[in-house]
Length: 435
Ligand SMILES: [Cu+2]
Image (cartoon, rainbow, N blue to C red; front, side, top):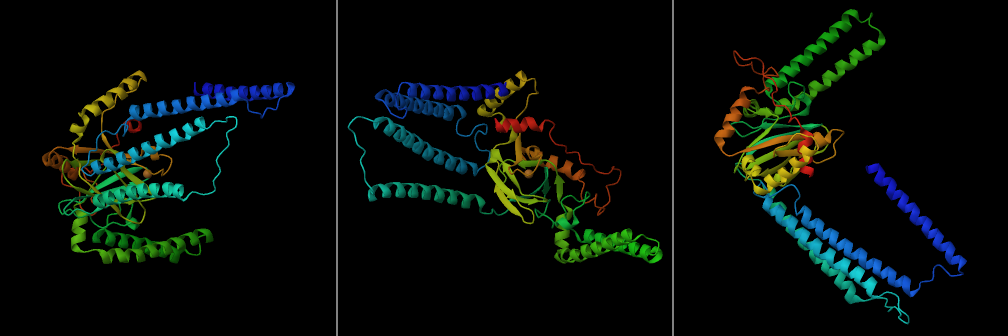
């Protein structure tokens, strides 16, 4: 169907070009200069301009009303979001005033001053008054927009005291969350100790010691092999083994600053951290999110909460917000109900499964081939008790630090596994946001 439309458009363009050629030829036959403008031509052009102006105004006005100010997002689900929405609306009002004003003047002047016999254009080289008008007015308006934006940005990025700390870790192509535990302090972390058993690279003294020992052992084993069978090993293989020893020695040196940074408190802070694949928040609690990235720049976007922050490898970024609607409440807001009804009606027609409202954390930087699928479900519960129940479950099945061999698995329980899979139809949820 789309291909057909493209073909039709191309054919129409070719037909128009041919018509122009025919017109030029016929003008030449009639011995008329085809660049000469008759009164009828001018009238026709003015009429077409008016038609185009009306079509532009009507279609854009219709679009503004049809899609509304924040298509698909509804009201803000966070406290600071109201300020962001206010800024957004104020900017739109300015843009729309300028749009309608300039377009009307542009088309209006073109139509009003169409070519007439005996009329000559006014010539003037400079007008200080005009220069001032179109320099000062935009400068004042832009300054207003920037000052307003800075004030809101300052307000929403000032750290809150006693906010609940959660780390969000980005990598191609998923999110992992780390709750800071009872002490509300995250343990140290470093990319040098990342492995499958310790995906976020959480650091404790025991872990660094264990790494140090394991790598020392590897070095000794390699050295022993070289000493005993050195003559029998092919040169290529020998070089490879020596390279590995050097690499391990370098890694051990790099462990030293990590060890130095550890203390009894930071060890304790790390051991009670809980790593999960889903974000659970309590309505009315102020959260402090700390962002890290393992590979490339990602951007944590919480569309419903009007929050976004880049996740940059090698540094920690932060953002704070307070949810004001639980998932249940937001799901039952009249505009959400209506929006999802419309989406599901279309999905049923398309033979797809219906979807329900969920808060989402998305990645808003094109970070690679599966970027579109990089998301995490966010659940906002009404009460602390509901959260505590969920949290107790997560603690029971938490993978780290058992996975890294730092503590033993609880008696009578099988080894913990990652039970937090991604939502089944992630594409569907992303489509809902895009709608
Ligand atoms: Cu990403």
